[in-house]
Length: 293
Image (tube, rainbow, N blue to C red):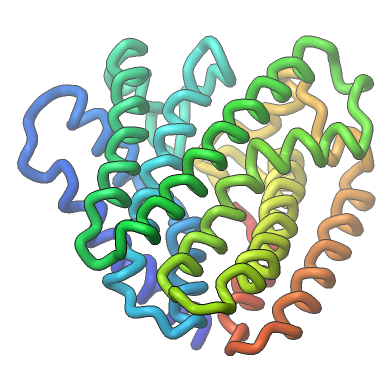
């Protein structure tokens, strides 16, 4: 119950921040961006940033622009991923995808708009020093570039077929596509500390974020096979339909679950060795391992 209450408290901060972004606009592209940004979801990435900041005793207002920016980048990536030229998904979070609710051109622009808004939020944050803003923006830019590379590798996998994948190639793809942004979530708050411990903390939290990102992808692959469309809020078995190689196609469901459990064990060990309160962060890893949507 404590974990759920904390998660709801942090996600509530995010929801309030995101709801204000396009509240006064009536322009179509803004409405489309808002449609996808406020469509629900777990807010896992933004909550992760807020949780790391809280563990480091950083005030929420200082990290909220960065956490909101992360959610904007994530929403932008989903809008573009759903387009017919990429994953061609008609559903997202139980609602029509942005290009179905509006049209393809508007969806492309909405994704671009959210990308720009993410960097505006970080770079205009009055609560944060110029040096910290630059560091956070660099983390997000690097993560999003890697995400694009990972999506390209995903497309190449679909074109070549599942049999072309090895564990090494899958890890490389998803270290880019999924883990890069989650890793940025764990490192972004560190720039607000301004202490000699920044570099060592960045290294430790980067490793934690990378493993958490891989764990998130493995459980996503498992859910694509074991979940329903109603559960997932998007088409189930979409990877199989598109002949995309996944951890499940390579390892099987049981093998992928064993791989996920090993990642979870590593994450718990990493967090337990850090010199700050990490119970909620461990709870987030537990949540990722056991999630059903």
